[in-house]
Image (cartoon, rainbow over all chains, first blue to last red; front, top):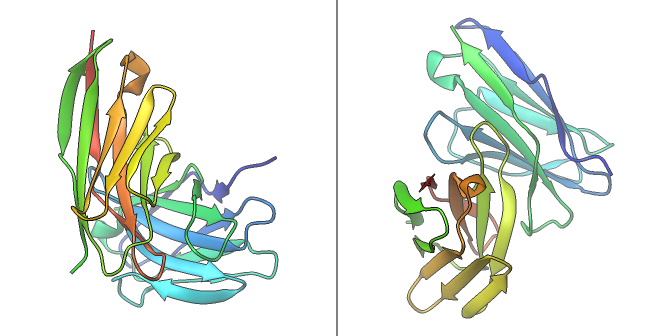
Length: 113
Length: 109
């Protein structure tokens, strides 16, 4: 069974540009979570989608947005990129609508120059 | 407020035992998770405690005290491959995970 897949693996952008990151959850999982992990820091919760709806968002500005598609895959968009957006962006999926055990993808490393 | 505290870094010797502590303060509580994250890799699930007591799983055990807002992860017979960051995460009343910053465990021969 395929795990959580994320693309791209690495992405380099310049300040002010937009970045789009994609995530495919494990088959059958309806909940998708996005986290930001800056170098040396813990996981910071960004967004939670379930059944196509945004259920919760973390303490991030509105330029961080996303969506979940009917097939439960998800997309994270970061507009007006800033240097401090450079981080590993992790997507995780879970089987149930409450947190339960999360299964993480390998992440997308975003570098903003 | 909601907070998860764990030590930043610990060092232990191959073959020894190490205990990584975690204290939590969440609005409501629905269990505590431990994840392992090797450098450059995704976190992987280790354990979940929702009731007080010790859960043993091979060389790894996790303990929870709800009354004290305290958990620990116990690693026995340490191996070099156990060098990783160990993330503690508590679930709040909305079942959202609140993550600690992680404890980097360094294993020395």
